[in-house]
Length: 124
Image (cartoon, rainbow, N blue to C red; front, top):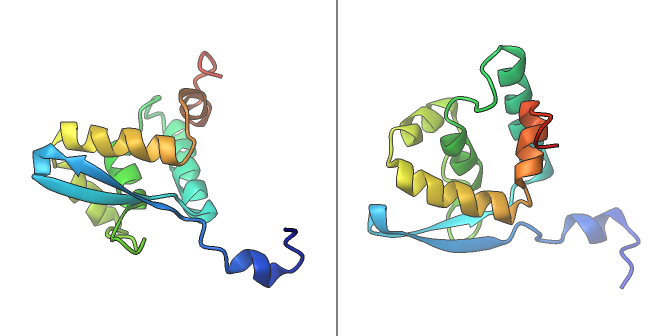
């Protein structure tokens, strides 16, 4: 069915929510697909880190991706401030790895994308 009006596009709920078991936290969490604005925010973060000479792995990248994707069962973000990124960054690396890996898959961010964002020409 063709989407012929802006309203027909804007009313679509396309930020799917997925549950993830996190044994390190003795429970499950929900993750969602990033919005275009959030994906741009992540790309700016990578770009800024590269410009500031932080190398190919920006500080707290797992926690930053978790902040952009962790949500409640209805898809509302749980975390949104820079302070939240630092607080999450102090949580279990194993838990953050689980979240990071699923978030990257849900958002179709592959190794090639990460390499390009970080300025790593070998991954591109």
